[in-house]
Image (cartoon, rainbow, N blue to C red):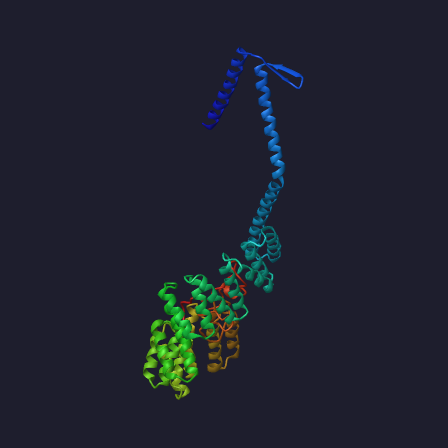
Length: 458
């Protein structure tokens, strides 16, 4: 439609020109000009054509002068647009290189992007990520500091500096930076979680609990997660109270923690031990027995054995057999029962419990080790014991505590990982997941690491 209208407009203009030419041809007329001794005579049509040509020449000349005067600015603008396009392309390539883990190309593209964009926020972020990928933490920190000079990127720069401080173990600096970030964006859930995790890592349990309560009040954290986090904080407070000899406060804190998160094994075991210390032995036993009925765990068995420290070895073995019988079908119950049957020289009972695990394909290294010990102690059969030990060497490993943030395997649960100080990151599970064969994360593309991962299992 537009093409038709354009053709029609051109046709109308040509018709107009033709009509004017015909009108002038019918009225030729003559014009004479005398100036400085010269006389010029011409027709009206020729004069009009000459005027039109003169206007066209003057217009072209004016355009040429304008082009010459504006030329440098136009060329500069074109060069700027070309450089910007090159900078944007370098940013894209650099971010792809960071995601691919290509440290050399990431650094190359970061230099190109920074030069082309004159230190734009995205270029600074790419420079920081490339530096971290190359292990140049000083350069990464400089880039994040430069981001603090721009109001638009200050929050992101603070986030990067917090992560770097946490990675080098400087939790005090990280906490100070987190408070700066909170002042910029009070409603950011990540900031509240970061401050909470850092306070917990520093052992500032009361401050951590206040932060958590505030986050829950402002709905910056899910209610279920908040309960779990608060229970872990209370366990930390109970440990601190016990360390300074305040058993009564430790007991109160442990009770509250267990009420908030009954499935948190650490809360259950600490409460049981504190109840036993206070002379409430039967209450402590019921607590462990109820927990064992829900989810058997070696820490529960250890706490149960500790309730009666004066008992003989035979009495302890019988007590633990009673605990195992509460949840007889569980793998941990069968292993506990087998161990105590070995201690009581009840060979047939021990063999039955262990062979059920073998038959059900639930056997682990601990199962085969116990079978080897059974062969050795019951029959003195070293050959058969060696066969079971060989199976143990290739068998599935036992569940243990793993840090979901760095893969560390501590001997016991704690509120935060002893290696990376991540809060509530220890998870009881069997080895073999991908997190055990990967190195600890260096730095995600957004410059962050999880501050307080939530673990559902005890």
